[in-house]
Length: 82
Image (cartoon, rainbow, N blue to C red):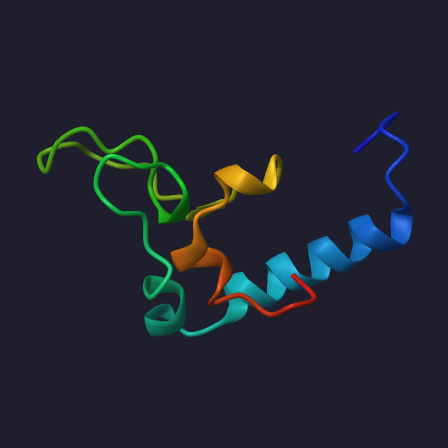
């Protein structure tokens, strides 16, 4: 985040929380999986068929603002510091 005036301590904490998430066991990450038809959560955003060859890259996508667009089933499972 450059030129957004976000405190570097906040950015560093978010990086730390994100790294912790990806270091967690697969079953824990899987509990935050994307649901069909939505991009938010843990998974793959660009899988369009079961026959598709993937360049594997995990992602964890969250909408943070506005708060009204957050997915409660995801946010309730995250640590409060996240």
